[in-house]
Length: 472
Image (cartoon, rainbow, N blue to C red; front, side, top):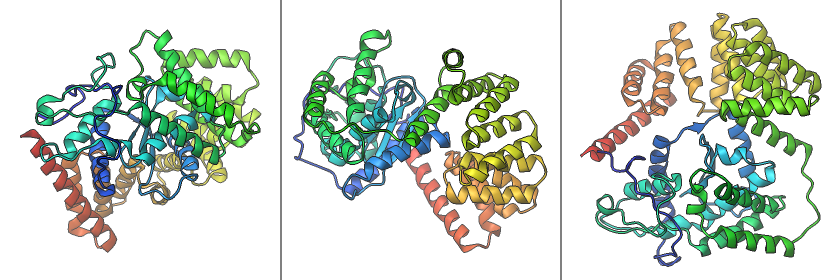
């Protein structure tokens, strides 16, 4: 039986004060990174991440803007969107920041997104999680990572009574409190506001988004937002932040046209492509009626129409959007993507190359150019496109799959096995990964690729050993 799973973790509601003094114990940076790797494994088993490059890149750009206001950090920060309509955001040890798509959907400005990210970044900077973890011979980092993942994901429901719950046999008979205290929250707010203002944000976004989270509790029939159970004292925080903003008022910060556009297009795509279909369709129908001149209204409506199978009308609305915002690479890319899905490959390639001429490194544009080239029989050109994509975006997993297949069609089986092996390893399909990587190792000559294969095989063997240990 797996040590900790989403189904069986006991939720810990994090309202009680700290049981371990803030500076009494803190694991080392190296230990925190190890804990983070374990934490990520549990999270990725239990959630669906939105991996849309436009949305993820935008999120990371906002996060990196805030990071730039920090002193040098021991961790590399990463930002993720979980496909979940709940209002939640959390930080793992060692700089992994998560936000639910439902909370992002509820936002109206980049200021709000920056506010919530700034707060979570501050938790990492203060190392609040690592300060809560008391090393024990009986409790390993893997167990602690599973418990922490269950806490922040809200596993088991958020209506459990307040306080720290004993984990029982899963924690070797010991009680653990990994609680953000009121003091932690105030410290994260103070530091977050400081970094936000240094990064060029006003700080009002944090106040606004906290009020939205609170209103979800009051006016929704859903469970209490997980964010309120993992980040306590929201009323005190709202009062504090309001006072801080009054006492630190600066001339109104003007949001640039580019920042407004970047937020609007990422937000529009999130709702249209990953939100509830009926809700999104209704939202953009209303938006078209109210704002027929808005290119973004037509763009969002086109995306949800294509998603529901109405590609003909989707193309019409994308063309209308282009009339109002000519040469927008995002609109051109999605027009090419829809042409591709309809089997109109010459039209798709023409639109996609137009997008690439404006934004040559856009990963989704390159991905669909490569796929279109495959369909048109331009295999060598497809190899070049996918190689370029992977060189700049090594984690674009599907590109690895298609590149492996193209190499197979060209008869270059050592490269086919190499890229398919990496693809399956990224998907944690270790059986297929081992098959392809071992095949590649027999014939591949490139020393860099051989070194990469040996590294991946070592990692797979380690993961398999850990899985067997968990099953005992």
